[in-house]
Amino acid sequence: MKSALLAAVTAPSLLFGSIAFGQSSAEFEVIEGSTAGLTLTVTIDTSIGTSSDVDTTVQQVTGFANANFDPAIPPFLAMELPELEFNLGTGDVSYDLFCLPIFGCQTLEITVSDFIIRLDKGGVSAPFEGDTAFFPDAPFVSSFNYSVTGDLVNIEGSNVVPDFYSFGADVIPLKGNDLLMDNLLLQTFSFELDPADLPVGVNNVTIEAQVDLSGTMLFGTLESACSPGDFNCDGCVDGGDLGILLAAWGTPGSDLSGDGSTDGADLGIFLSLWGC
Image (tube, rainbow, N blue to C red; front, side, top):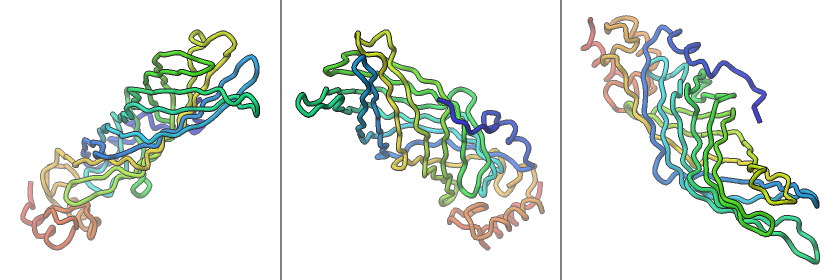
């Protein structure tokens, strides 16, 4: 499965370095207590027909992201994600398949462990629309171990699934240089169990995975190579930086005092830094 949406998000250099502002970076960590809803839909094709069922489990999530931003301070115009990883740990789901009024159902239990979703090498980049960056065709790799037990199938194995999924996130400036990555969106993806592992009479087992990251947030701190007040990173605190400060008035964008807003206190600090 590959998304039909195509964009030049896999070429970060098309966005970064083309803007006459400085750049900054942030290392994000998934906030403790974050969760993800993992919905797995199983479809089994056998010699007697096809049946499917769905089950959901809520997983604790750990993970991280490394991000670069252009310009160096909010409001950002573009974001690059060289690294992004979510670890959903171990989850159990169960299914009732080929149900008949007299004979009942064929049961199936699936355990997925070490379930990791990460960006492939090279990362992605995209422009912001407001606080949102959307990557319509991001290269991900999902890896996990699985154990399938039941009336029809009893197998264990592991799987590595490289594919292209849409991904989106909001980046919200907080007080000082702190950032929140929230409202995460990941496209549904699917994979098949190795036909060589399936018993006679079972032709195909397809699993569709929907990962709801609405309960997952990441926290990071913005770091810049620029000196305080040098918002465009040209080596001087001057009129160009003053324009950036005034454009960020009332927002956290050029907050030098650490109170979460760009105001008169920041202007005073800025003027004291004037020069090269």
